[in-house]
Length: 207
Length: 207
DNA sequence: CATTCAATTGACCAATATGGTCAATTGCAG
DNA sequence: CTGCAATTGACCATATTGGTCAATTGAATG
Image (cartoon, rainbow over all chains, first blue to last red):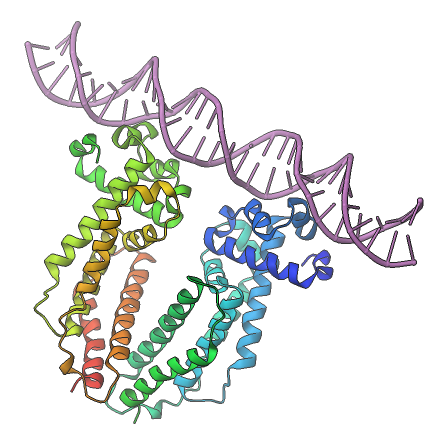
């Protein structure tokens, strides 16, 4: 990352990052417009390139920032000693919602980087880092206590149902918040509604 | 729709439609490129505008084509006398998979039209038609036999779980097919795997 | 073969957008 | 005031935009 970025005002830096995430997530590396980014961030063209030198520099700075942020949050908030997959996945979803509220398209962005075609991007992103992300996602569903499930049900299918439900639930929450008046999320209400799904799963899938 | 389009060769017409759906779905009306469309369709610039006169004409032709196609398929293949929501939604998913195999981004496209910001598009798409689509989606989950569910479970939540599971399952099937070698979908296998999820739900949610 | 006419092409247009530069201005600390 | 960093935006060559149209092709007809 460019030395110039270190001394940046924190609020301004976050704003540039947020705007850049949205632009890269929506249009991919090649078709993302630095003109659009500076307009949305409310800064001049010159200043952006003063901080980041090139489009590539901006991209890799933002990408590394996102990967670090996601990893840090997951490590801090997911209790790997918790062997009940319902709790583990519910907490993962809460982390995703929190992060998405700060940077609405952060997960679209990192997911899109996987399938980026531009050579400039492929050279920018180390294979190691890509693999590390896949690893940490896998970690989220390891060391699970499968004995909690009823003997007669298909556990692999049940887990898919749980994962998909929590993903869709999170997406629903976020789409509701982005639309009307921009009131903050009520995490208490979200947690409470998520728990009604956990209750359903516990009644149906667990012993 | 422009009279010229009537006499078009069917295969060529479908190709133009398919390519246009993808471009409009990916980039929206304003940022969709007619240059990209003609390149992908393997025709000349002049020919596209010979058939459709303007970008608007192409867009509205493709949009109406999609809406008609989806409505026709749903009416033909969904049995509204079937009051078991599991069967009804499973069949809806199968229709979506079939249509998506022919036009991979057709549902992304029609969904995106709802949130189009360009005035040119808003004037092109009649409010009536938009409402009709919403209506037919609502019809898909009316006249359901709720007495099949166990008394003690939250039926509304259970239905959401079912809908979300089938949507995610369909998306998974389609993402697998688009990636590697482009072999056709095995509908027998898809139906069979979908039925394992129905079985799970029947065991857990139904009396 | 010549004639006709529809199907099809792609060079071309003015307008706009692209990533990136840099001399000039602003703002603030000493 | 000086000095230096932060910040600006007009400017550049190049590429892309939706759309045009005179010219070419292909096939059917007499």
